[in-house]
Length: 372
Image (cartoon, rainbow, N blue to C red; front, side, top):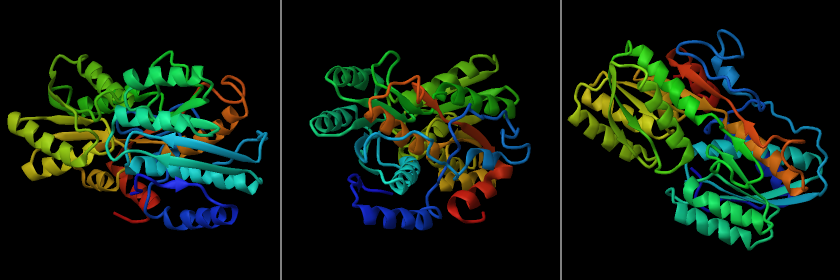
Protein backbone atom coordinates (compact mmCIF):
# COMPACT_ATOMS: atom_id res chain seq x y z
CA UNK A 1 0.00 0.00 0.00
CA UNK A 2 1.24 3.46 -0.75
CA UNK A 3 2.29 5.71 2.10
CA UNK A 4 0.63 8.98 3.01
CA UNK A 5 3.01 11.16 1.07
CA UNK A 6 3.26 9.50 -2.32
CA UNK A 7 3.97 12.21 -4.88
CA UNK A 8 3.72 12.28 -8.64
CA UNK A 9 6.08 15.18 -9.35
CA UNK A 10 8.19 13.55 -12.02
CA UNK A 11 10.67 14.81 -14.56
CA UNK A 12 10.15 13.90 -18.17
CA UNK A 13 12.41 10.86 -18.50
CA UNK A 14 11.53 9.53 -15.07
CA UNK A 15 7.84 9.67 -15.95
CA UNK A 16 8.41 7.39 -18.91
CA UNK A 17 10.44 4.93 -16.86
CA UNK A 18 8.08 4.87 -13.90
CA UNK A 19 5.03 4.45 -16.12
CA UNK A 20 6.63 1.53 -17.93
CA UNK A 21 7.64 -0.15 -14.68
CA UNK A 22 4.20 0.44 -13.19
CA UNK A 23 2.56 -1.26 -16.12
CA UNK A 24 4.73 -4.35 -15.53
CA UNK A 25 4.97 -4.57 -11.75
CA UNK A 26 1.71 -3.12 -10.42
CA UNK A 27 -0.60 -4.94 -12.80
CA UNK A 28 0.24 -8.24 -11.18
CA UNK A 29 -0.25 -7.08 -7.60
CA UNK A 30 -2.78 -4.28 -7.58
CA UNK A 31 -6.32 -4.25 -8.98
CA UNK A 32 -6.75 -2.32 -12.21
CA UNK A 33 -10.40 -1.84 -13.07
CA UNK A 34 -11.81 0.01 -16.01
CA UNK A 35 -14.17 0.65 -18.86
CA UNK A 36 -15.02 3.83 -20.66
CA UNK A 37 -17.50 6.12 -18.96
CA UNK A 38 -20.83 4.48 -19.70
CA UNK A 39 -24.20 3.62 -18.18
CA UNK A 40 -23.86 1.43 -15.13
CA UNK A 41 -23.81 -2.33 -15.66
CA UNK A 42 -24.87 -3.67 -12.27
CA UNK A 43 -26.25 -7.18 -12.60
CA UNK A 44 -29.20 -8.90 -11.00
CA UNK A 45 -28.41 -11.79 -8.70
CA UNK A 46 -26.58 -14.50 -10.58
CA UNK A 47 -26.98 -12.74 -13.92
CA UNK A 48 -24.29 -11.67 -16.34
CA UNK A 49 -23.05 -8.17 -17.17
CA UNK A 50 -23.31 -6.21 -20.38
CA UNK A 51 -20.13 -7.53 -22.04
CA UNK A 52 -21.76 -10.87 -22.71
CA UNK A 53 -23.90 -13.53 -21.06
CA UNK A 54 -20.88 -15.47 -19.80
CA UNK A 55 -18.33 -12.73 -19.20
CA UNK A 56 -19.21 -10.35 -16.34
CA UNK A 57 -15.55 -10.05 -15.37
CA UNK A 58 -14.45 -8.52 -18.66
CA UNK A 59 -17.39 -6.14 -18.59
CA UNK A 60 -16.03 -4.74 -15.32
CA UNK A 61 -12.35 -4.63 -16.32
CA UNK A 62 -10.92 -2.97 -19.40
CA UNK A 63 -7.31 -1.84 -19.63
CA UNK A 64 -7.73 -0.28 -23.08
CA UNK A 65 -8.51 3.31 -22.12
CA UNK A 66 -7.44 6.07 -24.50
CA UNK A 67 -7.53 9.84 -24.20
CA UNK A 68 -10.22 11.55 -26.23
CA UNK A 69 -9.48 14.01 -29.03
CA UNK A 70 -9.46 17.14 -26.85
CA UNK A 71 -6.34 19.27 -27.47
CA UNK A 72 -5.08 20.76 -24.17
CA UNK A 73 -4.17 24.45 -24.20
CA UNK A 74 -0.96 24.09 -22.18
CA UNK A 75 2.02 21.75 -22.18
CA UNK A 76 2.15 21.35 -18.39
CA UNK A 77 -0.52 20.87 -15.71
CA UNK A 78 -0.16 20.51 -11.96
CA UNK A 79 -2.98 19.04 -9.86
CA UNK A 80 -3.68 18.20 -6.22
CA UNK A 81 -5.88 15.24 -5.27
CA UNK A 82 -6.84 14.14 -1.78
CA UNK A 83 -9.09 11.26 -0.81
CA UNK A 84 -10.62 9.76 2.31
CA UNK A 85 -7.88 7.43 3.55
CA UNK A 86 -4.80 5.49 2.46
CA UNK A 87 -6.28 2.26 1.14
CA UNK A 88 -5.84 -0.25 -1.71
CA UNK A 89 -9.08 0.96 -3.35
CA UNK A 90 -7.49 4.33 -4.14
CA UNK A 91 -4.34 2.56 -5.32
CA UNK A 92 -6.46 1.14 -8.15
CA UNK A 93 -7.84 4.60 -8.92
CA UNK A 94 -4.27 5.92 -9.09
CA UNK A 95 -3.32 3.36 -11.72
CA UNK A 96 -5.90 4.88 -14.05
CA UNK A 97 -4.42 8.29 -13.31
CA UNK A 98 -0.94 7.06 -14.15
CA UNK A 99 -2.09 5.70 -17.49
CA UNK A 100 -3.74 9.01 -18.45
CA UNK A 101 -0.58 10.81 -17.34
CA UNK A 102 1.53 8.53 -19.55
CA UNK A 103 -0.70 9.06 -22.58
CA UNK A 104 -0.56 12.84 -22.15
CA UNK A 105 3.22 12.59 -22.00
CA UNK A 106 3.16 10.70 -25.30
CA UNK A 107 1.45 13.80 -26.72
CA UNK A 108 4.14 16.09 -25.30
CA UNK A 109 2.03 17.25 -22.34
CA UNK A 110 3.44 16.88 -18.82
CA UNK A 111 0.88 16.22 -16.08
CA UNK A 112 2.17 16.31 -12.50
CA UNK A 113 0.09 15.85 -9.39
CA UNK A 114 0.10 15.14 -5.70
CA UNK A 115 -2.08 12.26 -4.55
CA UNK A 116 -2.25 12.26 -0.77
CA UNK A 117 -4.53 11.16 2.07
CA UNK A 118 -4.49 10.53 5.82
CA UNK A 119 -4.12 7.08 7.35
CA UNK A 120 -7.67 7.37 8.71
CA UNK A 121 -10.67 9.21 7.31
CA UNK A 122 -11.10 12.64 8.88
CA UNK A 123 -13.10 15.65 7.70
CA UNK A 124 -10.87 17.87 9.85
CA UNK A 125 -7.72 16.51 8.22
CA UNK A 126 -9.26 16.85 4.77
CA UNK A 127 -10.21 20.45 5.50
CA UNK A 128 -6.60 21.27 6.42
CA UNK A 129 -5.26 19.60 3.29
CA UNK A 130 -7.66 21.49 1.03
CA UNK A 131 -6.93 24.86 2.61
CA UNK A 132 -3.18 24.24 2.36
CA UNK A 133 -3.48 23.20 -1.28
CA UNK A 134 -5.54 26.30 -2.03
CA UNK A 135 -2.56 28.46 -1.09
CA UNK A 136 -0.39 26.81 -3.74
CA UNK A 137 -0.33 27.12 -7.51
CA UNK A 138 -2.36 24.08 -8.58
CA UNK A 139 -4.37 24.16 -11.78
CA UNK A 140 -7.15 22.06 -10.22
CA UNK A 141 -7.81 20.64 -6.77
CA UNK A 142 -9.74 17.37 -6.55
CA UNK A 143 -11.25 15.73 -3.47
CA UNK A 144 -12.98 12.49 -2.58
CA UNK A 145 -15.33 13.92 0.05
CA UNK A 146 -14.92 12.51 3.57
CA UNK A 147 -18.03 14.17 5.04
CA UNK A 148 -20.37 16.07 2.75
CA UNK A 149 -21.87 18.25 5.51
CA UNK A 150 -18.46 19.58 6.52
CA UNK A 151 -16.56 19.57 3.23
CA UNK A 152 -19.24 20.80 0.80
CA UNK A 153 -19.49 24.33 2.29
CA UNK A 154 -15.69 24.58 2.18
CA UNK A 155 -15.68 23.65 -1.51
CA UNK A 156 -18.25 26.39 -2.15
CA UNK A 157 -15.95 28.92 -0.47
CA UNK A 158 -12.97 27.73 -2.50
CA UNK A 159 -14.86 28.02 -5.80
CA UNK A 160 -16.13 31.48 -4.82
CA UNK A 161 -12.51 32.47 -4.22
CA UNK A 162 -11.59 31.44 -7.76
CA UNK A 163 -10.12 27.97 -7.07
CA UNK A 164 -10.97 25.29 -9.62
CA UNK A 165 -12.33 22.40 -7.57
CA UNK A 166 -13.65 19.02 -8.68
CA UNK A 167 -14.68 15.90 -6.80
CA UNK A 168 -13.72 12.38 -7.78
CA UNK A 169 -13.67 8.72 -6.75
CA UNK A 170 -16.57 7.27 -4.76
CA UNK A 171 -17.87 10.34 -2.90
CA UNK A 172 -19.29 13.50 -4.44
CA UNK A 173 -20.13 16.64 -2.47
CA UNK A 174 -23.64 17.46 -1.27
CA UNK A 175 -26.31 18.27 -3.83
CA UNK A 176 -26.00 21.88 -4.99
CA UNK A 177 -22.30 22.21 -4.13
CA UNK A 178 -20.44 24.55 -6.47
CA UNK A 179 -17.70 22.05 -7.32
CA UNK A 180 -17.18 22.08 -11.08
CA UNK A 181 -17.52 18.36 -11.85
CA UNK A 182 -17.50 14.89 -10.34
CA UNK A 183 -15.90 11.73 -11.74
CA UNK A 184 -16.81 8.48 -10.05
CA UNK A 185 -19.64 6.32 -8.79
CA UNK A 186 -22.93 8.22 -9.01
CA UNK A 187 -25.10 5.26 -8.01
CA UNK A 188 -23.96 4.20 -4.54
CA UNK A 189 -27.54 4.11 -3.30
CA UNK A 190 -28.49 1.76 -6.14
CA UNK A 191 -25.40 -0.37 -5.47
CA UNK A 192 -26.58 -0.78 -1.88
CA UNK A 193 -30.03 -1.75 -3.13
CA UNK A 194 -28.64 -4.23 -5.66
CA UNK A 195 -26.37 -5.95 -3.13
CA UNK A 196 -29.17 -6.19 -0.58
CA UNK A 197 -31.68 -7.44 -3.14
CA UNK A 198 -29.21 -10.22 -4.03
CA UNK A 199 -28.90 -11.07 -0.34
CA UNK A 200 -32.67 -11.03 0.24
CA UNK A 201 -33.24 -13.31 -2.76
CA UNK A 202 -30.55 -15.70 -1.53
CA UNK A 203 -32.28 -15.85 1.88
CA UNK A 204 -35.73 -16.38 0.40
CA UNK A 205 -36.80 -12.93 1.61
CA UNK A 206 -36.75 -14.03 5.25
CA UNK A 207 -34.17 -13.46 7.96
CA UNK A 208 -32.12 -11.21 10.19
CA UNK A 209 -29.36 -9.10 8.68
CA UNK A 210 -26.74 -6.61 9.81
CA UNK A 211 -25.20 -3.67 7.97
CA UNK A 212 -21.53 -2.68 8.21
CA UNK A 213 -21.41 0.89 6.91
CA UNK A 214 -17.88 2.31 6.92
CA UNK A 215 -17.01 5.94 7.69
CA UNK A 216 -19.53 8.18 9.43
CA UNK A 217 -20.68 10.86 6.99
CA UNK A 218 -18.90 9.42 3.92
CA UNK A 219 -21.49 9.87 1.15
CA UNK A 220 -20.73 6.59 -0.65
CA UNK A 221 -20.91 4.48 2.50
CA UNK A 222 -23.99 6.22 3.86
CA UNK A 223 -25.79 5.99 0.50
CA UNK A 224 -25.15 2.25 0.21
CA UNK A 225 -26.41 1.71 3.74
CA UNK A 226 -29.52 3.75 2.95
CA UNK A 227 -30.11 1.62 -0.15
CA UNK A 228 -29.75 -1.50 1.99
CA UNK A 229 -32.24 -0.25 4.57
CA UNK A 230 -34.80 0.75 1.94
CA UNK A 231 -34.52 -2.64 0.25
CA UNK A 232 -35.00 -4.58 3.49
CA UNK A 233 -38.01 -2.40 4.30
CA UNK A 234 -39.83 -3.85 1.27
CA UNK A 235 -39.96 -7.32 2.79
CA UNK A 236 -42.01 -7.98 5.92
CA UNK A 237 -40.04 -11.07 6.94
CA UNK A 238 -36.66 -9.33 6.72
CA UNK A 239 -35.23 -7.54 9.77
CA UNK A 240 -32.16 -5.38 10.35
CA UNK A 241 -30.77 -6.31 13.76
CA UNK A 242 -27.61 -4.17 13.78
CA UNK A 243 -25.98 -1.27 11.94
CA UNK A 244 -22.35 -0.57 12.76
CA UNK A 245 -19.65 1.82 11.50
CA UNK A 246 -16.32 0.06 10.97
CA UNK A 247 -14.45 3.18 9.74
CA UNK A 248 -13.29 1.27 6.64
CA UNK A 249 -11.10 -0.92 8.86
CA UNK A 250 -10.85 -4.67 8.31
CA UNK A 251 -9.89 -5.21 11.94
CA UNK A 252 -12.80 -3.17 13.30
CA UNK A 253 -15.21 -4.88 10.89
CA UNK A 254 -13.98 -8.24 12.23
CA UNK A 255 -14.51 -7.15 15.85
CA UNK A 256 -17.94 -5.68 15.13
CA UNK A 257 -19.05 -8.83 13.31
CA UNK A 258 -17.94 -10.91 16.28
CA UNK A 259 -20.09 -8.72 18.52
CA UNK A 260 -23.08 -8.91 16.17
CA UNK A 261 -22.84 -12.71 16.04
CA UNK A 262 -22.62 -12.88 19.83
CA UNK A 263 -25.72 -10.69 20.20
CA UNK A 264 -27.55 -12.45 17.35
CA UNK A 265 -26.21 -16.00 16.86
CA UNK A 266 -28.95 -16.76 14.33
CA UNK A 267 -27.87 -13.92 12.04
CA UNK A 268 -28.74 -14.72 8.42
CA UNK A 269 -26.77 -12.13 6.48
CA UNK A 270 -24.51 -9.07 6.39
CA UNK A 271 -24.46 -6.17 3.93
CA UNK A 272 -20.96 -4.67 3.72
CA UNK A 273 -20.76 -1.12 2.34
CA UNK A 274 -17.04 -0.69 1.62
CA UNK A 275 -14.00 -2.65 0.47
CA UNK A 276 -12.62 -3.46 3.93
CA UNK A 277 -15.62 -4.82 5.78
CA UNK A 278 -16.36 -7.90 3.62
CA UNK A 279 -12.94 -9.22 4.62
CA UNK A 280 -13.41 -8.53 8.33
CA UNK A 281 -16.92 -9.97 8.26
CA UNK A 282 -15.77 -13.11 6.44
CA UNK A 283 -13.00 -13.76 8.96
CA UNK A 284 -15.48 -13.52 11.82
CA UNK A 285 -18.10 -15.65 10.05
CA UNK A 286 -15.56 -18.41 9.40
CA UNK A 287 -14.26 -18.29 12.96
CA UNK A 288 -17.78 -18.56 14.39
CA UNK A 289 -18.78 -21.28 11.89
CA UNK A 290 -21.81 -19.15 11.07
CA UNK A 291 -23.94 -19.67 7.97
CA UNK A 292 -24.59 -15.93 7.57
CA UNK A 293 -24.48 -14.80 3.94
CA UNK A 294 -22.16 -11.89 3.10
CA UNK A 295 -22.56 -9.37 0.28
CA UNK A 296 -20.16 -6.46 -0.10
CA UNK A 297 -18.18 -4.08 -2.23
CA UNK A 298 -15.14 -4.20 -4.45
CA UNK A 299 -12.10 -6.20 -5.38
CA UNK A 300 -9.93 -6.86 -2.32
CA UNK A 301 -7.80 -9.93 -3.04
CA UNK A 302 -8.74 -11.69 0.20
CA UNK A 303 -12.41 -10.88 -0.40
CA UNK A 304 -12.22 -12.42 -3.89
CA UNK A 305 -10.72 -15.58 -2.37
CA UNK A 306 -13.61 -15.73 0.08
CA UNK A 307 -15.96 -15.25 -2.85
CA UNK A 308 -14.31 -18.14 -4.68
CA UNK A 309 -14.71 -20.31 -1.57
CA UNK A 310 -18.37 -19.38 -1.15
CA UNK A 311 -17.87 -17.54 2.14
CA UNK A 312 -18.92 -14.29 0.42
CA UNK A 313 -21.96 -14.52 -1.88
CA UNK A 314 -21.32 -11.56 -4.18
CA UNK A 315 -19.20 -8.42 -4.52
CA UNK A 316 -20.03 -5.15 -6.29
CA UNK A 317 -16.84 -4.32 -8.21
CA UNK A 318 -16.42 -0.65 -9.10
CA UNK A 319 -14.63 0.66 -12.17
CA UNK A 320 -11.70 2.19 -10.26
CA UNK A 321 -9.35 2.33 -13.23
CA UNK A 322 -11.72 4.48 -15.28
CA UNK A 323 -12.38 6.72 -12.30
CA UNK A 324 -8.68 7.59 -12.18
CA UNK A 325 -8.26 7.86 -15.94
CA UNK A 326 -11.28 10.10 -16.40
CA UNK A 327 -10.35 12.23 -13.37
CA UNK A 328 -7.14 13.34 -15.12
CA UNK A 329 -8.92 14.00 -18.42
CA UNK A 330 -11.61 16.10 -16.74
CA UNK A 331 -9.04 17.97 -14.62
CA UNK A 332 -7.14 19.02 -17.76
CA UNK A 333 -10.32 20.38 -19.33
CA UNK A 334 -11.31 22.22 -16.15
CA UNK A 335 -7.80 23.71 -15.92
CA UNK A 336 -8.27 25.10 -19.44
CA UNK A 337 -11.40 26.95 -18.31
CA UNK A 338 -14.01 24.57 -19.71
CA UNK A 339 -17.28 24.05 -17.86
CA UNK A 340 -19.37 20.91 -17.53
CA UNK A 341 -21.96 20.21 -20.17
CA UNK A 342 -19.85 20.53 -23.29
CA UNK A 343 -16.60 18.61 -23.33
CA UNK A 344 -17.44 16.63 -20.19
CA UNK A 345 -20.55 15.97 -18.09
CA UNK A 346 -21.09 17.43 -14.64
CA UNK A 347 -21.02 13.84 -13.37
CA UNK A 348 -19.03 11.15 -15.13
CA UNK A 349 -20.77 7.89 -14.25
CA UNK A 350 -18.56 4.81 -13.85
CA UNK A 351 -19.93 1.28 -13.65
CA UNK A 352 -20.36 -1.28 -10.89
CA UNK A 353 -20.71 -4.99 -11.67
CA UNK A 354 -21.90 -7.70 -9.29
CA UNK A 355 -19.47 -10.62 -9.32
CA UNK A 356 -20.47 -14.08 -8.04
CA UNK A 357 -18.61 -17.23 -7.06
CA UNK A 358 -18.43 -18.63 -10.58
CA UNK A 359 -16.45 -15.54 -11.71
CA UNK A 360 -14.14 -15.17 -8.70
CA UNK A 361 -11.24 -17.26 -10.03
CA UNK A 362 -11.16 -15.33 -13.31
CA UNK A 363 -11.27 -12.01 -11.46
CA UNK A 364 -8.40 -13.09 -9.22
CA UNK A 365 -6.33 -14.10 -12.23
CA UNK A 366 -7.14 -10.93 -14.15
CA UNK A 367 -6.47 -8.49 -11.31
CA UNK A 368 -3.81 -10.24 -9.26
CA UNK A 369 -2.15 -12.61 -11.72
CA UNK A 370 -3.03 -15.73 -9.81
CA UNK A 371 -5.41 -18.65 -10.16
CA UNK A 372 -7.45 -19.41 -7.07
